[in-house]
Image (cartoon, rainbow, N blue to C red; front, side, top):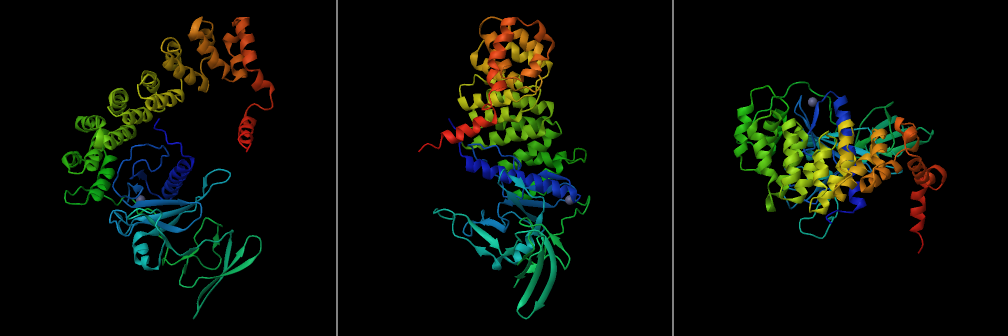
Amino acid sequence: MAFKDDASFLHFVTMGALGTRVGWAGLEQAGHRIVELERYCCSNKIWATKVKRLRLPDLLCLRCGRRFEVRTKTSLEIKMSHSPTNPDRVWDAGMRDNDVAVFLRCRDEPKLAVANTLNCFEVSQLRATQPLARLGPPKSASEGAERDLTWPSWVPSASGRITAIEANGAGTRLTVSYANGRQYTYRANGKHVYGQVGTTFVGEEQILASVVPSQADVRCAGDTWTPIISAEASPAEIFTALKGLTYRLADGSTDQIRAMLDHADPRIRLEAAAALARRDEAAGLAALSDALNGTGDSTPWALEAAFILAEVHTPNAIASLQVGARSAPHPEARSACLWGLRGDTASLATSLQAATDADESVAIHAAIVGATQILNGESTTLAIAHLEGDPKRAAVAMEALARAQSPSYDLVLAAASAAGAAGNWAFTALSRMNPDAVRQSAAWHDAPAAMKDGLTRAWFSRESSWLDGDNQHALDVLARQHL
Ligand SMILES: [Zn+2]
């Protein structure tokens, strides 16, 4: 099984994705119209195949063209990953001077919660003050390992207000009054203070002083950007322009984009295909379908093509995902196609087909996508029809019914009256549904007494035991503490 059961890695990826979403929302409040520049930066889905993307900031404003890198930390700092000996992994690789690094604080207890104070710095100012930043030890023993580069800063630990700023020969002294009435004086020697007397701040989530001269003004400049593809530009710049053009459907740039289908870099070719697929151009859809067939070294591009088709999400793109879910040669590409169909009305049919995939990981993806599908009348009927026949498909159909928000109880009750496996699956789905909702359905009244009795017994624990529900988790946790 190729599932990475690594809770700490998931925690880390989730924090990044949540932070990018919070940054996105904050930037939209500042007038920007944000899209993902680095694909998947807002997702916490873990894939075994690594897609080696261009080094680019996470987000892009379609109006002003400004780009934003979002960094989320449990302890707020101005910190970037840096590998001094690898030009592709230096902290500012692929960054423009006017790109903005956004730093956010994330609480992780009791659950992940990202504060919505955006601490923004322009790359030009971080570059200018890089000599003042501290370089941490290598994070691993490998050659060219990443290190942390940290620009010294001060984040007050509690909320409060600046009451005095004094500059003298010895440097700047900053006096704050915390909400609990306590006064504190911070020696901001060599650091610049962001605020003046009277400025209020939020503890733990706001950088109040640092070696960087000023915080970036991130208000959107308005509709000032015209993305243009220049064939001589760097892949990162062409990629940014393509991303901008992707969302401008009627600006006559289709020929410019089509020319990039022959670019030497596969990432540019795929991004051009994405822009064309969004315009429903056959050449773009064909390039993405071709990429879905990649194996070996091309497997990452098969996954990327699936991610792109999910993003484009036109009827033709959805149709390509349905084909890819069945026929992409690499199993993880088939999983990525299924994943891209989540929530779509057509996803249940594809998931039921894929439930018998020879690769177990694909079948599991099919199960979760099918099981979390929002059921309408048509898909409820489809799920019930699959309770009979192949047991792997029946199990997915049963999960879909059991997890449905408000399925047609009448249809499921009718199915449960059938003899054999199909009736058993339907009964099992009912046993996992909300008892009150099932009892209130029209068909309950006329259901056979034996079925009502059976379901009442099946629901007995959840309706009677104080240990059912959340307490089961507490029991499991304590049961593991036996050494
Ligand atoms: Zn903008």
